[in-house]
Image 1 (cartoon, rainbow, N blue to C red):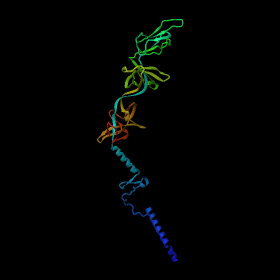
Image 2: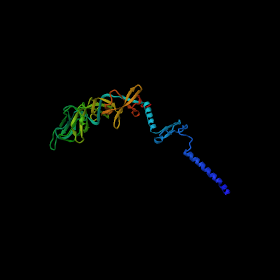
Image 3: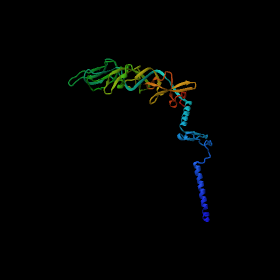
Length: 358
């Protein structure tokens, strides 16, 4: 029996050692016998949990060894710090002054240059056009013969019948040729006064209620790039074209210009609405949000130049500006460039060059 126990004793010792080592490892892993006691300071470089951190946040290791919580309280503190940083940095902006003036709306159309007065010439008899005695561009006096018509028929012989100009002017067109058969309703030629030109355009029906004699327009021509001519409405057709739903409008140049010729194609900017003596802000200063419109106004105080977010009420909209009916006064300065980099209360610096955060 003693020999049997003595034979298995080494195995028993080995099992006991294994169990002891394994138990020690498990105890260390579970931390059941940690050398730290409650309330003892954490060693340098370790994380110290804040009260309640286990429920609402986590703990992260700071470089200095101090623990930083990432919970709501820390997030709020970070946001406040970001706001303080944003409000203390200086941002470069461009500004413009709010002014009092005129604002207009317009519609862009196309038109043709014509003579102010055009007279069509007709023969007094039917027959065959023998010849035209003038060419397009020729100047004629009142009573000048512009063509001859032969009224002869089979078995009859008549003297040629002259077609005379009823006015002095310039030949604008000759729509017939020698040998053509003409009647008393056939246009032989058109005579016009080139000293007085008009631009004819067609205005869509939706704008006709805003048109009036003397209304303003600007004209430009492909043949004269970069040059703008002022014009005014001289006549309005009393009826609309039923096919195109447009109203014919004629414009007179404020000053005649020999470079403008009959037949030229014109681009017309016709003013459809105008307001005078209104507060105007640059279009690029106004920020149009979903439910509000606002600008950033320049403010000077003891701490420097800052911007103030200001809600505004808009009136008429122009090409490059807005009418301001509330929120701004004439003479105030508003930010036109750099708006995307600022918030209410930012310190700014007004510059003339490129804008951006400093």
